[in-house]
Image (cartoon, rainbow, N blue to C red; front, side, top):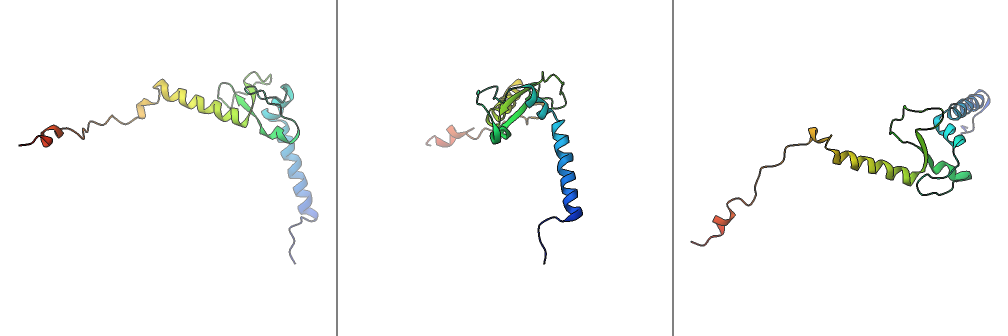
Amino acid sequence: MATDTPRGDDLQDLVATARRDRERRDGSYRSRALQLFPPVCGVCGRDFEGAKLRELTVHHKDHNHDNNPPDGSNWELLCIYCHDNEHERKDVADAYTGSSNADAPAPSTYQPFAGLDKLLKKP
């Protein structure tokens, strides 16, 4: 009879893995940002307490996820909705800068109505 409950060594491995994961998360920039800043979205101002804290994300102001200064100067806490909106705004702005036009296809030269006036003339 098989069970889904871990036993003995499996349970010890599971607990050890959970502890390692917690220690890794506690050292992450998200944990650090949550220690530095109040649990409030920097855009909409919603307050996040308890279980809702998981909806609060760390946004990198310069959009560089490798830039994680210990003082948190490149971070701001945003709710998941405002965070998505911030990235969408950046994508739209990048589209209008023209920097990505190098990969854009050449404009079409096809003229579907060319010569239509001749076809419509009655003989």
